[in-house]
Image (cartoon, rainbow, N blue to C red; front, side, top):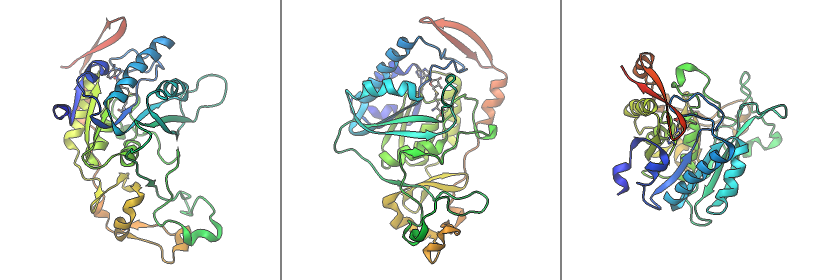
Length: 339
Ligand SMILES: C[S@@+](CC[C@H](N)C(=O)[O-])C[C@H]1O[C@@H](n2cnc3c(N)ncnc32)[C@H](O)[C@@H]1O
């Protein structure tokens, strides 16, 4: 029954669309909802009253728990303020694993500390038997000189040749700054952020569901890593952008038999278990202590897949669209009319 919803972005309200998804049927649910910060989405009024917003969030969070398999994981991305409420609610139904701190400058909230991270709440549906894999990222280096960022003193020859295990603080993934790399969406996530969550909690052919799909970041990450996806998205234009990008996406983020995450022609995340198979594709500093100034490099650059271009045709179409405002259930909606 789940089959007919797989590998599609469904246009509509997530609360309605969730009703079609059977209990315990997807491996991972990931949500990046509107943050209720008056963002300029094309078809959604992002400014509910405090309690109204939280009541709405509880509806789709409980649907996420319902559809996730007992071996599966649940991720919620938001600003810390909302995550504290999400966690209080989710603690009743799922098992807390981590608060991942994604180190990026965020929206100033007033005259206090400057917010510098988004949170990703990571829960498993059950306390035992969840699918989880340790990850590694490349060693952090000084950008100009290329030296290791951290001083490992006399222990350099004990370092892992690829890089350290990934912690719950992510400082190596930056927000999309270049307009050439982003779609016409105010909050598009970096795709290698999604790759990391997917590599950590799923295997090939597993199903990832995103109820706020936006311009399809989760779906594209899932497809290029050989996984299946289900996306829900209210906005017709974002659905169309996603579909165009998905058509261009191949399941090719792989070296040999192992799925890996690439970004801007570099490998940014691997699974720890895969290193034994991956090592033969890399030149490793010899002796290893030279890793201080010498990098572990992919030998054959042709193994790096080409990243897809953004949906330029959609941009052209968007310029010609007209927008009409109306109200549905008291919410301000902007209807986009295509030429
Ligand atoms: C923060 S954005 C998600 C961005 C996405 N992660 C990406 O990288 O493109 C939230 C998205 O939720 C959509 N949305 C808002 N309310 C919705 C609803 N009730 N059902 C489905 N989608 C909704 C908005 O149109 C917006 O695209």
